[in-house]
Length: 460
Image: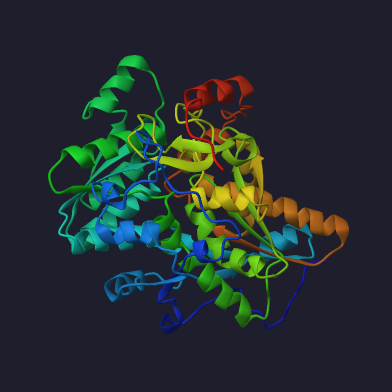
């Protein structure tokens, strides 16, 4: 049943000259405009000048722009060419193992030096900070892929970096911390004793596994209280998603080389960056009439899109960020300690939330045992060991391929292989040793976390 497709390569490469020189901004094509971030004190749209306290002006401009295409600076292009364009691969061995008529393509972002897609925006953000004369950056990281990517990017531009790493990931993934240190960054477990926010959380919840919301609070506090320091975020905000669209723009060119177009585009969802990166260029096609399904996949233990509320909420635990329009489980929500640390965030990117609310994409959640099962099958067929986050997308890909087999229908599946799992083998050890279990998030926990949002402005 699987297609032989003689002559179609296993990997489809683009020459360096064909790497996109512009990022795509989906705001220019949204059927409904994105609601603005609000100042929690006034309830009014945030003044861009307020954002300049934590971001360089060029980043603030990209956060607010409605231009469809944003040029990539030559200095950023030069460093992206270290690993881009990334290959588009055909998962033929998995197709054969599943005996499916579906063709499975994946954009391999694991080939970056840091091992994931996060370097796409890390390089851009480090560059804009350097251009603004910033000498130090504070940030957070979950699984450590963002922290390690920004550590490398800051090393490229001669900027100091401090990373607040979610405590449970700090313990589970020690080699990510070492990777950051190798590239010159300082990394501490969050919550830490280095900030007022961290000390308060530790006083209230001394045994907390931490969360991205807590780590963001610490990093933002660090940025606004330390001289010549700015904050950098690895997901969620518009400019981050903008930088990641290089993934989907390359994939469109590569699919065209083999005269294919995806029937479904899939990405794992935490804050939304790799999902938007692969999906937004194809969502533009969908908005303009193309027949393509877009599917986001999240952990059942942190089901922001599938069980969250579409509302204004803080992006962090302590309320140091503006109020953002997003699907949220509540900024007080602390996700359980599943191994997919990069997907353990209480909210979804406002732009991803907007397209989901408008019915332009679908979402599903997957339990961690099914994800690791999918990761093992992938490793034993395709050879590469995927990151725990990436296994969520692979689990959905397998479901789509099996459905194609049951229906006897050809289908082109494209997904973002967002990162490798070579520094996440402790999670595979726990799975193979039978130490992992599924976790069904009680509705009462979501309801309790959302109580803190009761007085926030409502979305129009």
